[in-house]
Structures are given as structure tokens and as C-alpha cells.
Amino acid sequence: MPRSLDGLVLAPVADQAPGQVGTRTRFTYHERDGRIWADYAGGDVVHGHLVGTRDGDRLDFRYVQLKHDGTTSSGHCVSAVVELPDGRVRLEESWQWESQPGSGTSVVEQVR
Image (cartoon, rainbow, N blue to C red; front, top):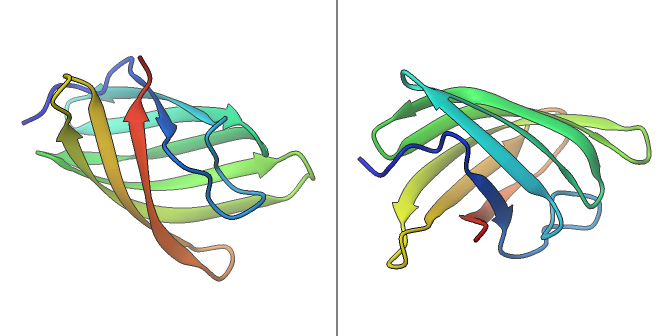
């Protein structure tokens, strides 16, 4: 199993659709006994939380966020944890909104 996510800061490698998580967003992860959670903010997101579980190199979590325009949104994400050759962590994500239409994929990587 790749190393723990506890205390790691990750950021998207590319911007998503306008008004969503982007390269200025930072996720601070925590992990304990198969449980994961993170706080995130930056770009269009004022405050976000995610919470879920980890089983080996697979994360399964729900997320909720507040944007600068005052709207909220929520969804579900499944991620594969990958260790990069330089020792950093990458999450390869498949997500789907639950509060609005839309789904997609994204990649976040540990910030140096």
C-alpha cells in the first residue's frame, strides 16, 4: 500500500470547468485506520470538506463545498492512490456530482 496521506497537501494538476476546483485549490488530507478526510479551499472554493474510506490504494469519499458566489454543491468520488517516481503521491479521480448534473475525471498531486 502506498504511504499514508495523513498531513499531505495536494493540488489539481489542471483546472476543471469554470467555478469548480482548480489549480489554486489545496487539499489537506488526514488518514487514520482506513478513514480519510480533508479540508480544501482556493480558487472558486471558499471551503470544502471530504470524508470517506481507504482500502489499499482505493479511496471512496463524499465531498461538499461552498463557493464564493454562495452556492453549495456535493458529490461522490473514487480515487486510485499512486506513488510517483519522485516519491510524491498522486490521486487519479473519478467523480460525479450528486447535487447537480455532471461527472468527470481529475488528477491531484502532492505539493512539493
